[in-house]
Amino acid sequence: MTVTGGLATVDVGRRFISRRTRTRPSLLARLSQLVGTVTGLHGATRVQLLIDGEPVSGVFPGVPTESPITFRFLQTPNVGVPVPPSPRLKPPDKHVKQIQQRLIKLGYLLPGAADGRLGPVTEEGILAFQKWEGLDRTGSLNARTESRLAVAAHPVPISLAGTEKRAEVLLGRQVALLIVGNRVVRTIAVSSGKPSTPTPPGNYRVYAKIRRWWSTPFREWLPWAVPFVGGIAFHEYLNVPGYAASHGCVRQAAAVARGTHAFAEVGMPVKVIANS
Image (tube, rainbow, N blue to C red; front, side, top):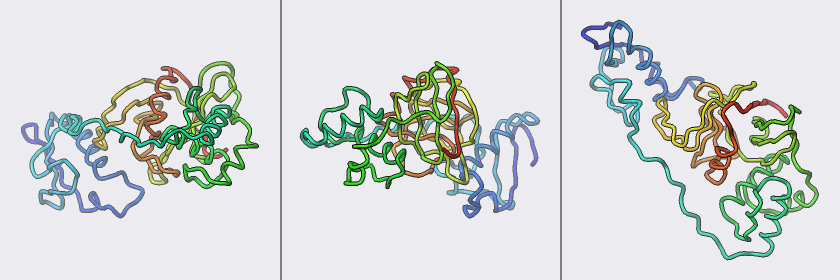
């Protein structure tokens, strides 16, 4: 690295842009880490990236690196906040309403959600139920899910911890429990950090509530964010699979993310549990 007149020129090897090393951060995260670290050193405000002595282009999605870039550029949103698609709901169905009423009683749906229409909110509740009960994670009604619903018990916290609001993230089951006192008031389906970028087990506290949070490392919006350690947060995401798939955050479907944001309080304990 050399710095001249506020310009830092950084020459790295091709491993820096390799996609094969699964334990390394994404390409955008690597670039953000490098630029964020270098700017400020010896008065540097801009960074020119070289790979084996040559400028690189077309490697980092949405970021031109042929010329010098600044950390402010990476901090500036370049896309709009993602909007979940509007669901196309079928007419109300009596059987669906009975399923919803059962999910409400068990804490997978909120009171008032029993409208008889099978949409994203109910599908999220079904997926959370399947995850808690160890069933196939389909998010859709099937005979085994309905049979288990008839005999299932209300989820309980893994740890007992007094009377305050709190949350538990169960990495093994890929669910989060929203708890008041020692009663689970909502069980939600989540997708935590994948093996290469895991969500770290431990005891944390919510330190902010942010309706629209721009992720500089990954250059994307994280709506309804509730961060609790570093850059790791509960947040809304359009893709919440049945398995761990994030860069460390706790993804939630749009059907529940706003509710978690409303439930959370700054200072609220969050316990991330590896196995439960």
